[in-house]
Structures are given as C-alpha cells and as structure tokens.
Length: 631
Image: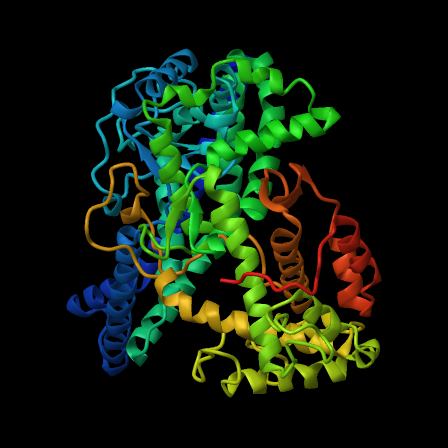
C-alpha cells in the first residue's frame, strides 16, 4: 500500500470506522425512542377504539410515563455530552505575529501535502507533536479557515455536511530548540498530513462524539453531595461509559486509519531527512526527561523555576554528545540553523513554556511571586544547589535536636558545638547503631520519632499540621513516608531508621504548609500574552503529571546526609556548588567534579560503617568537626 492508493485505503478505512461510531450513536438514539414509539402506538390504538379496556388504559399510562422518563434522561445525557468541555492539553499559544516564519513553514508544508493548514500553533513542554481539535464552544470561537476543494480527496462522499475547522498543531518545545529547521519540517510532515482526514465530516463528527462522551464521564465523576445529584451523575456515568465501551474498538481503528493515511501522504516530503530526524526525537526525549528530573525538580522544590528549560535541554544534549561515543556527530549539527530561530522572541516563549512545565510537573503557582520566582542557569549553583544543600542540612540538625542528640561530644574543643558533620557521623555510628532494624522495630521507631516531632519538640514545628495525602496507609507507619517505607528501612541501623522517620515527618509538615500557596488557582488578572492557556484546562488537580513518586525514608536520609557532607566540603575545604546538565547539583573541587559520593553515604546509612565516608573526607581535606553555615 503506497502512494495515493495507500492514502485512499487508509482514509476509507478511517471513514468506515467513523460511520461505525456514528451508528452506535444512532442505535442509542433509537433505544431511547423505543418507549416513546410504544406509547404513541398505545395512544393511537386507544383513540381509534382498537385497544380499549382497563388493562390497555393502565398499560398506556405506564408506558407513557416510562417514555417521558426515558426521553428526559436521554435529553439530559445528550445535553451533557454536547455541552461538556472536552479535555485539552495545557499549551502556550504561538501567535502568528510572534512566529511568522514558523507559520509560513507549516503552511508551505500543508500545501506540499495537499491538506488544510492547521488553524493555529501551540507549544507544550513535552517531546511529542500532534493535532488537537479546539472547536468546542467552551474553547472560544474557531479561527477562520480557508476553503480547499481538494481537502477531501480520496475520502469519498460529498462534503456538503458540517465540516470542522482545522485543528491546532501542538509542537513539543524541546524539538524547536534542539532540532534544525529541516529536521523539524520532516518530523511535522506526518502530523500536518493528518489535517486532511480530520476535515472529513464523518470523522470529525465521530471524534466530537467520542470527546463528548469522555467529557461526560468526567462530569459524572466529579464529587456531588446532594443525593439527587449523585443519582443523576451515576446514571450519566453509566450511560456514557456504556457508549464509550461500544465505540472503543471502532474509534481506535479509525485513528489508526487516519494515522496510516497521514503517514502515506507524508512519504513524499523529506522522507530521507525524517529518518535522521527520528533519531533526534529519541535523543531529545532522553535529554528532556533527564533535565526535568535531575535539574529542574530540585529548583522547583526550592520555590524557584528555571526560566530557560529549552536552552537547558540543548546544553544537556550537547554534554551527552561529548560523553557518549554513540552521540558523536550530533554536536556538529549545532552549526546549522536551529528551529527556534523561526520564533521572533524565543526567550519569551521559552520562559512561558518553562513556567507551564513547572505547573504541570510540580504543581507550582501560575504566576511568579516571593516564594515562586524564576532562576537563570548562571544563578542556579548559588540560588538552587547551595540553598538546597544548606536547607537540607538545617532540617537534618533540627531533627537531631528533636531526637535529643547532643551537638558536641564530651572532650571536644570549646566553640565547636555548632552544626557539624561529626555530629551526624557520631550519631549514626555509635555502638547501638550497629544493631540493624527489623521491620517491626522500624514501625516502632517511626512512631516514636513522629510522636516527638508532633508534640512540637522540634524548633518551629506546628502541632496541627495536616498529614500529606500519600500517608493514608494507617497509623504507626510514619508521617510523610511511602507505604513500603518499613521494607525500605529494613536492614538499616536502628538510629538511621529513626532519623529517616523524623526527616520524613518534618519534610511532610513543611510541604503541607507550603501546599496551599503551591496549588492556588490563577488570579483573575490578565497575564502575559505568551502565558499558558489557562482558560482551556482545569488546574484544580495539580500537578497533572508528577515526575516522581514520593521519596522513601532511605532516599530522604541519604539526600540529607549528602547535603551535610557537601556543606562541610564548601565551608571547610573550599569546594563549590555546580550544575551538571545530566546529573543535576554537583560538587566541584578546583573546577573539577568530585568522585561519586553515593556509595560512601549508602554505606553509612545501611550498615552504620563510616569508614568509606571518612576516607573520602580525608582525601579531600574536609574537616567534619568544623561547624558549617546553614540557612
């Protein structure tokens, strides 16, 4: 199946499946009208004198009432399906005046493919591209579209019925910054080709019906308090899910047919370059995921959002090309024109997409503020890395204070009773710490630590702080820890397990206090023109796409000890915080990255053996007995 024949076959298959979806809708309508038809027959029979008698009169009343109830219920379901707002991907709209070259390239691509041009272009913080229909009245009036006599070629049938406006082209922002102009055009070719099948009335109607059912299910799933609303939503949800199950197979085959037709149509445009560009898609995805989880997430947790994430993914992939022999040759591409040059102000777009990414993946506020401000990459080491380490170290010592651990050991030099790394090492390597914690003991230690923390023994610890949402696994397992934390801490030292439990509880309280500000809805004041399209999506359940599950107690304890070690290295040995594009926060000595610290810290956490860590400290000249500066 190649060429025009392949396009026609794929389009015909998509249309046949669309008709099957519409037949499901018609059958549902017929079922809803059956009681009414029976009532009409009974009423006509009574008026003509053919169906008379007490039995027929009673049956007429029963069937008429049933028909009225079914018609009202069907009308209600149809109204909700038609009026409910379908789900829309959060994006940043690219106005034509802010990217004329990008619009020109897309329109030229549509002309070469002989399909309608997309009605608009939007950016999303994801490594993907697709077409999205935003013609629903809740999304605003559709933009004017040009008429194309040949748009429906190969689809068969007249085009005199209702036709949908061209969909919006959503482009992953990392593609614009990492790919070259030719590569982006090759990657977008099969996506833009999908506007041809999408314009057919049958396919458009089937998609509207599916999206309406999906939106109706979401409406039925919303919480209701009064009994009448709950009963109505239960009926709405049952009917919508039944219709969705009936359409599921046909809808999936319809989309496969549309994709096959679009892919066949795009074969003639930049096919050779598309093979090379697909390699860049996978590479961009790997770099973007690494940048979000290793670099952006620590900044978001500190209340700062990197304002140039797309620039950062280019730096991360360039660093990957330097380290990985398989990526050799990718750096030479940087001499070609990047696709972000198609934007008039790429920096403004990058900032808007970066803020949207923080909102989607972390649940940050929609606007900047005192506790939510942008940070540049040149400021990242001082504003994020240094602050993160010192904040974690301060939390570690607050929990040690709550557990009653003395700041100085007997016989130490006066003036060294401040927060020191030696205090942490001595606490975790005392003789009692050599005893490993069993799962049962871990539960008790968690409870003891939380009892101390919840009674306000820690400095500034509130007594009525709400529990985090993921601590719903029962009492005695620790506040703010994952359900399997007991298994995670089994085999660690007893004092290590207690310290991990206290850190988890303290961290959970701090997150609970900051959560109301983090999930506050966007204000009614108008924002910048390049900001996220807040009117198109519901932001009541943020983050929509969390990057990582809640950290376990072992991970939290390891991170805090690592932070304390880094603080000691900076304050006593002249080390400096730095940013590694692939691994996130890193520690540098004399401009070079230090050896991996994780194995030494894990040895202390898991077995209470400080030997590897003390040897690491001695090699770099770090003095654990000296106090460090905290925030």
